Amino acid sequence: MPFTPDEFFEHATSSDAASGIDPASIFAAWESFPFDAEVLTVVPLRRPLVPEAPRSGDDPLNCRGCTSEDGLIVWENENWRLKTLSEPSGAPLVMILEPKQHSDYGELSDELAAEFGRILVHTV
Image 1 (tube, rainbow, N blue to C red):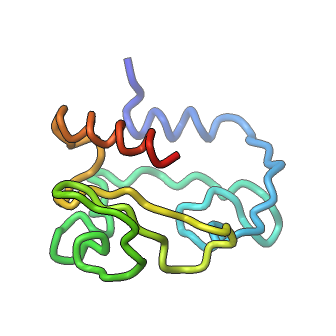
Image 2: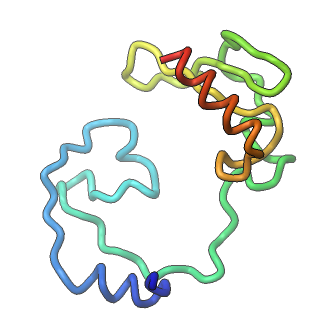
């Protein structure tokens, strides 16, 4: 049986976690980055917020994927677009395959999920 959010918090904070990861990347600036970039230690786990706060982009009206013209579209069809990442990342090239309809990948219909898999295989 899965943990409740409070049980998970208690379990996760009951033991020490060791960090051997160098966060020398742009990801260290993300709020969700799990390490303190200054001293290279694991950020203390915060108690879960229930209900969870809305994620950025949950609403199609403020979703960057739905409203932004950033990046160069490399390929598209009626359901998908493959585009470059617009911000510098340190990698030579970053491309994103995203659905044209506003949804998380876990919410895709079986047909769209199958199409996603086929397109992904051909782009790797």
